[in-house]
Structure formats: C-alpha cells, structure tokens
Length: 281
Image (cartoon, rainbow, N blue to C red; front, side, top):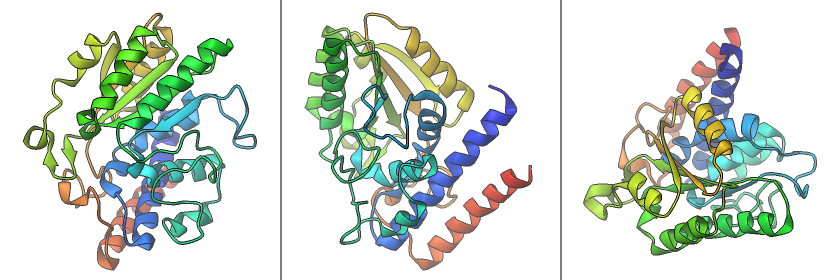
C-alpha cells in the first residue's frame, strides 16, 4: 500500500474513533471499547474494499456488511457518516429519542445498514443467508461480517459457521475482532472460545490471522480472501480494545460505559491532535 493511501485510511479511522467518543459521550451510555477496536477495519472496508454507493444505499449489486457485534454501532455510524451515507450532525444524537441512530443498527431507519443486529450470535447467520442468497440469485456481490470474540461463546455462531462451510460460501468473509476482552473480563476467565483459528478451520473456513491496526496486513488479508474458492474466509484480527484513546486501551471497564465530561475532553483532545497532525502532514 502506498503511503498516501495509508495516511488517508488512518485519517478516516481517526474520524470514526472521534465519532465513537462524540456519540457515546452525548448519549451518556454505549460501548466505546469494542467500537474503537474495529475502526481501522471499517475504514478499509468502506473506503477501499466494498463496492457501495452512498447515494444509492439500496443498490441491488452492492457488497453487504453485517455488524454482528451490534453494540459497536457507534463505529458503524462513524464510518457511514465519513462515507456520506448519513450526516455527521447525527452523531451526537446517538441513542436519543427520535434519532435514527439507536444503540444497535436498524436497517429500516439508517441508510447503509444492511441488517439489524444486537442479539449476539445472530449476525453471522444473517450474513451467511445473504451470501447464500447471492449464490442462488447469480449475483457476485460479497458479504462481510464483523463478530466479537466474546460473541463466539454463542452456539448459533458455530451453527452458522457449519452452514457457511458446508455451502462453500466463498463470497462470505467473517472478521473476528479478537481484542480478548468482553463485558465480564478477559476471554480465558469468562468462557474461553480459544483457539479461534483452529475452530473456524474445522468448519471448512480459510483462516487468516492479522494485526487489526496494520493497514498493510488488512489489505493483504482482504485481497487474499477474494482469491479463495469453495470455502468462506475468517479473518482473525488481533486488536486493542479502546484503541486510539490512551486511558481506554486494554481496559475492560470501557466495554460498556460512556466517558464523563473530563474523560470526553481528554479523548477528544487526543484524537483531534492526531487528526491535525495528519492534515499538516
């Protein structure tokens, strides 16, 4: 990847992270930690990978995206705003009465949302169904789904994985956000789904492991996924919960709470300073 493209993707990821902080602060609730950890992948998917049209969000041949870890919606709203699906002015209305930006994605009310999600484990099933639908309809669009690693403790995930592998859904790319922290603690302490790569491989997935915050690795993995035939792909991305906000990084307490006024100002200053450096560069 050339330096200019990488800088642009990093810049957009910072904007997504700022939207996460703005949204959760003004909502006084939400899930910033796991939203921040997927910002880089969302930046690449929406600005480089997926075939989409912000001015025609229901375009029949668009690539589809399913946020299976629906509580990370603030990051999805951030990238939808950055990409032009929704107005950036909506970000501070997160979870407010009357706003289209509720705590979990709503496909009926938000342009660019392909599946309503929130109940953990269900998103990958929907994504597999969408991918199969494309096959049956003779369409060549691809379907992408982001899951949380704690979400892998849901049995429905593995039913969907078995189905996707059996149906040889090579138009499906599942991305597991492996930040190793869930609401009650680290994976190993709560109910370990490890080893993750071997489990997906056992269900006939092509498995790729990457650093979630390295755009070169993200690009290589998604390019590789496009070449795979006869099986779906699982990208296991090792990420940092709370990435980009110093006091949130690797802190399980930031799974499901909003920053207060003082914490908001610190996070906002850090992200705006980083954004300013990219603009000057």
